[in-house]
Structures are given as structure tokens and as C-alpha cells.
Image (cartoon, rainbow, N blue to C red; front, side, top):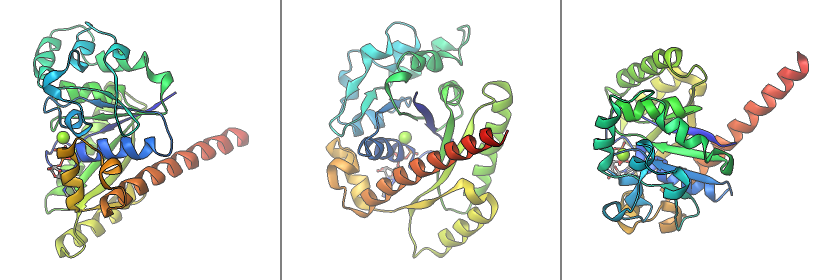
Length: 266
Ligand code: ADP
Ligand code: MG
């Protein structure tokens, strides 16, 4: 049964889509069976996976509106993962869903139908706490928060974590924080180093040890419709995302072992 991970931060441009695409591709190399879901009307994860968002016959929008089955819409990507593509139609879907019964449940219901076929489902969220993001958080086992180590980042992070806590009670009590990921990191930037230190002080184990450096190859890859794994896996960015996948899998194994020994003790 797939672990469903939402990649979320209400701030734009922090590396959500870059993380969603490259984590999906890196997990696929492990090899794990991975589905990437593009839930952002910008359709950047779709384009970055080599699928033209302007030429979709069907998309996640049709699935959310109950007009298609997820499995009919999923496409295979070159870098070894499956994609449930999305585009600007999601904006209309969101408006139509506003009045629907169980409007926060649509993605969860759709993913239930394909979940057994994957090890991981990664959901790329839009840069807001909209109904689409609520659908993602409701459908997910955990949320991975990419952040840039900037002056206001910690404030934004606390607000996001508070929102997730509030949501948990109401929608999805099982929701965990998969981790906080430092992205676009520049070690020569003193402020970034200070914010990073404060972040680990404050959030400890929640912070991934893996740090994603600022790396031009990561910014170039999407224009070739490729993940960093297909485009240049030996780049610093490629090595970092492969490292993130490794860390995530290791943490998952440790959690499972912890649970198993707890059950034994009980
Ligand atoms: P979000 O999805 O949170 O809006 P993106 O992943 O689209 O953020 O990243 C914003 C911009 O920064 C994109 O142009 C992307 O290519 C670039 N970018 C993201 N991560 C890195 C990185 N580690 N190094 C260099 N450029 C990056
Ligand atoms: Mg994005």
C-alpha cells in the first residue's frame, strides 16, 4: 500500500515542484513504484515530467469531478514513475467542487483506487492553503515541507505547522510531518546558515539531514521535460535528491522497526 506524501508550503517558489518531481524520480530509481500527482493549476510538475499540459486528453480535474477514473488518466514518464497530470483546468475544478458534498474527500477517494499499485504517491500542491491543498492533506499520510532558509521562513513554517495541526483534528488525525527540507541552499550565505541552525534547534529530528543546494542543473532540467535523474544525475542537485530519497526510505524503515518492537513489547 502506497505511502502518500503531500509536498506543501503556502509560499510559492520554495522548491515544492522541484522536490516533487525529483523525489519521485529518485524513489523510482530505488527502485520503488511511484505515482506523482500534479495538483497545481500551473501544471509545472506535469511539464517537468515531459508531458505537455496543453495537450492533455484527460487530467486530474476529470478525476476530481468524477468524470474519469484515476487509472484512465495516469501516464508513464520517461524517468520511471507514473504521473497523474494537471493543468489550469484545476482552477475551474476547485470552483465547481466548492459546493460539492465531501468536497475535501475527492482526491482521497480517487487515490484509494490506485494506491495498491504503488509504494509512494507524491502530491505536488499549489502555493496556497486552498481547497486543492486541503484535498491533498486529507488524502496523505504525511506532509513534506520544502523551505528556503530566509529571514521570514521560520515564521511561515510555524504558521504552516499550526495549520496542519488544526487540520489534523478536523480532517485527518493520522497526518504526520514527513520532514522539513532545506532547499536552494547556499553555504556561503551567512543568513541561510543562521536560519538553518535555528531550524534544527527548533524542529530537531523533523528536519531532513539532506540539504538541497542551489544548483543550476535543477533549474534547467524542467525545460527539457526531465527530472534531474534523467537530465544530469551526477550533478550536485541530482546527488542531493537521490540522497533525500535514501534518507526518506531509511526513516521509513526505522519507523517500521520501531513500531514492530513496540508491538512486541506490548
Ligand atoms: P514551487 O513549486 O514551490 O513554487 P519550484 O520548485 O517551482 O517552487 O522552484 C521555483 C524556481 O526555483 C524554479 O524556477 C526552479 O527551477 C528553481 N529551483 C528550485 N530548486 C532549485 C535549486 N535547488 N537550485 C536552483 N534552482 C532551483
Ligand atoms: Mg510548484
